[in-house]
Length: 347
Image (cartoon, rainbow, N blue to C red; front, side):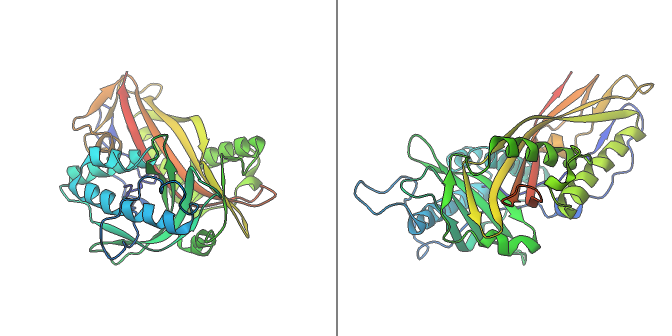
């Protein structure tokens, strides 16, 4: 399953001049691994990937727990083994993208990923036979004293198979909000927020992720995670590039909202996924080419093992945010986020 989130730590890069001294990774980026699980039923294998037989009880917390248990057993093993094909049987994008990147980082660092387990999960399930549901749980990572909390979404495909689609660790101050989904009825179909609000929120979150704003800063509250670590990492990255005669521009390609959202006492909890592209070019008056070194986090995440050099370099990426949106829309909070590169293309 998904595990490490890279929150815009400075990239290792260069053009044909000396590479700048690397800037230490941001604290949140250093936290890496975000793995997902739940305690099993006595540790025995559970086949819960498909819906229960016709005539069984409606899908609720118990069946959601079985889905999560079955997922944990298969996905934890695939993560430890670094088995990408096994992960594809358990996850879909954007979660799958982060999980594959995590495997590549583990291989690069020659360290296997730990097994994981979710404990004390709570669920928000739409009524009837849902196509998605949400879960919040504490993460237990083998060999780690850390026990973060994450929020996940599972979706059911046309073949009836349940797979993880979203998984984001939330900040410590957000634990109460995240767990307040317990027993709430989730809303299917992305209808929890109107289209105008979705567009405005996506634009503001993206702008703030690069240290800017759409002009309506009241839409999203000030966040140490978004405005500090994430946007701060982006600023450091730009400074590194400037120091070697290069520049980078990030553009938003599209924004997607999760299939399931849930109303809690303080607002609506939902996932926002942003697809973006970073374009690296030589700065005016700089060298003719721009370069990413082999140890660049983006090259590692995308499976490259050699430097990338060209007149320009394009990096596509996916960023996932957990938002709490109040009833009046303004003052939304970012509870957690993750980010990874998807592709690197040299022009």
